[in-house]
Amino acid sequence: MSEEGSFGLSFVERVFGLVILITGAMISYYTFTSTAALGAYTGFFGFLSLAVLVLGLILITAKTEE
Image (cartoon, rainbow, N blue to C red):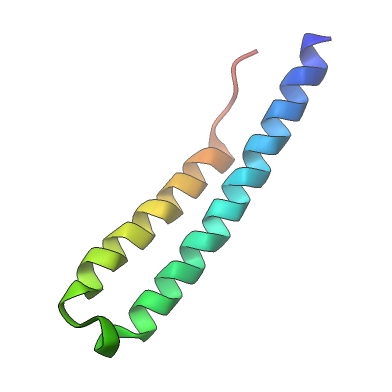
């Protein structure tokens, strides 16, 4: 029974990581295409978008404990 719960948790974690990865990619795209509107804050929002991308990658590649 613990194997089934582990599979479900792992699957949900990977799906959540994929959603965060896609969100981070969209944030990154819109940040770097609207540099004129953001002005001096482009670097800050670029850093935040890359942090979201890295978090998504970590969630996708992480292994859950059994």
